[in-house]
Image 1 (cartoon, rainbow, N blue to C red):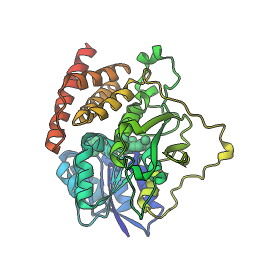
Image 2 (image 1 turned 90 degrees about the vertical axis):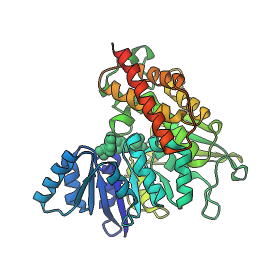
Image 3 (image 1 turned 30 degrees about the vertical axis):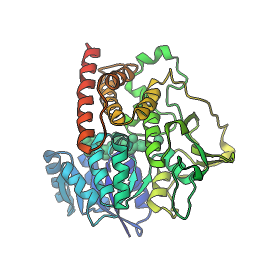
Length: 397
Ligand code: NAD
Ligand code: MG
């Protein structure tokens, strides 16, 4: 029996995770669940999965959850706040942690799971973008097993060589890897007239052609910052230098990414665009379990297309490559500015094309530091948020 903590249980990834878990009652048990504010949904999950512990964002939310659980006769212990999140991520009673909180809020508990040597199922890419070296150091020091949930990175993981059960780094010459080919759908605005992008609404930006996801990552997909964050994520997960990661637009989202080898081979992972496939892969790794996803029927595909990304249409993609090359805390600045700008766009304070302007302003004006400690990273995160808020306020006038 594998005991699981799901951080961000009420989100898109959290719900998909519990869907897979529910298909295998003899194999997985839920130790703990967390949610920020969707208390009713979390209560329903507690009734179904009977976790020992549940964590929410505030004392008021905890009171509401406790009352709902009392009424339902469920004995789950209710807690709140970041300390409690770190505690359910690192407790001796849990084996695996699904890190599916969105944004920088997920960093502390995800890192706590890594430090505690857990099997970490990483959906929360922002945590790795902010603190890549520190995070990977923690994984190596504790012997944690880090498995990517992001569909592209899960596909790359499945397409990487294994030497005696160990995965080499892309930068190791002996691995024979030429490049990582990171596929991108291009999102809802791939072919829209660029001149009309200023007028798009949050609803249009969140309407992804292939995937159903939370609102923040949906906007990131529309700006292609999501792919930018994934480039940085791939750098850390696979030891890949920036110039060996190539973004390839593939609008159908059937190939989820590829590894190109020096002998001319290209290995890819294919599947229907449903996150339950990478979730099931990581949950059961190295075994395979049913995920509820239909088998891919290639004969029903109209065609698979590939082309290069347009960096002028998607300036966020360039900003992310630049931050990766700059190193240090530049990716943390990029991530924080992006979180503020995306929220401002969702709140109708700025237009879609102002998202990249806010990020560029923050990354260009704030000094980049050394990412030698979590405190240093969090200080840069806070400075970037303040600068981005000020920039948003200026633009919103
Ligand atoms: P979502 O918005 O649907 O869910 C986010 C979850 O995080 C919710 O459970 C929410 O309660 C919790 N949360 C939000 N703010 C919080 C805070 N301040 N403190 C604690 N918890 C908080 O997001 P999602 O689409 O499920 O994405 C989650 C993560 O997975 C993101 O990092 C995203 O980039 C990544 N991811 C998602 C997908 C996808 O298909 N949805 C694919 C790849 C990667
Ligand atoms: Mg992805």
